[in-house]
Image (cartoon, rainbow, N blue to C red; front, side):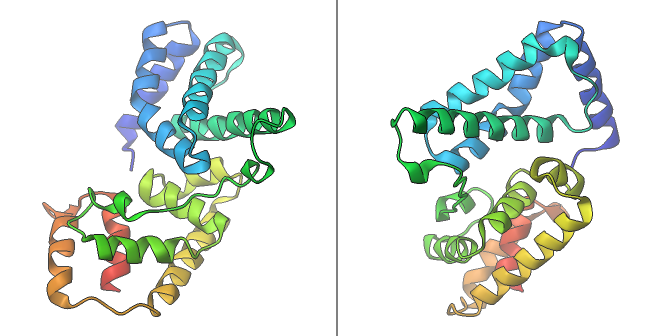
Length: 222
């Protein structure tokens, strides 16, 4: 989660960008590119489209910088902007018959076991079990958990991206985790011996290694 000092520094960079500082724009691009790319690939799984849309987001930002006001959360703003760009490009491409109709609007975030390998010492079988249960959730639930545990956004930022109020986001994530646990009950639980490396690697130096590690621990230890 972003600290107050980090938020203040981010706001300063944003103000410099609005005042025409190209170095500030480059800083914003470097700071948020990985998150935008990962989010975009989860939405449409088309690398060329995602790359083009990210470039278009920043081009539009630069050309419209004087009309932009202060924003609360830069990453949330950029994720929402990328979502709109991808939607617009998908609609345009579909009208030209260059993609299938089911490619549209489906922004269907799915998970694979590979998503969890870096966050914790998790086996392929354990990762597949978690991915399977996550993929049983509704699209809205998957998006909320992705933003919370992959992007590490807090409730307020998720509310900005998903166009919900904060309490609705809290309720959505609570219900999503509850549903995740219910899907887990249909699986054969791993032994405590198999879980120990997962728990040890997820918890480091008195805190969880990442938000995603917290989700992994919740799934396997609850």
